[in-house]
Image (cartoon, rainbow, N blue to C red; front, side, top):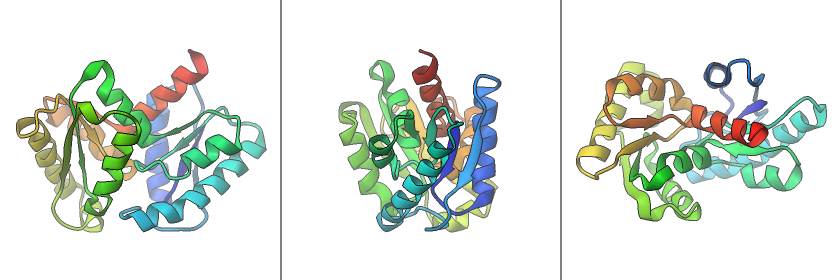
Length: 215
């Protein structure tokens, strides 16, 4: 499987690839690739749009090698996922689709905690497009700039934990999605800090791909 990082941070690629490998174990090899151009972080709709063609190009290169079982797009907004599905026969999964679907399974009320206020409308539209609005309790955002939080892991964890608690205590969520590929390590850590079920997008996407490949 190839994990495509839609932003240009190679450190983020390495982090997400490590989480995917831990999730899949020996079931499926994972190779991480970083897009060759575009935004360093996907924090607004323009950045998501700019990332989509870069993801498509990276995915097509990966498919052309002939050694990839599936493609995982490592961003919560799923840039380039639809385009890749049209252009290749490989299974393609995005973090947002996988995590939201997993969170809502069985009719569970779910919320989303994330760091990108400029993507709030895009996230809500994605929930609607997946047909999950009836189970969606809402979005809770961390205060401050996403770039600042990403540079300070403890501040990020504390802010996300408060957002998760708001999803549960104010909105009635029984599962909370951590909305972002670069938030992968924080999502793992929050599992031990929060009583509610935390849905981490990278493991969720890995599980979705494994189901498609192995039934």
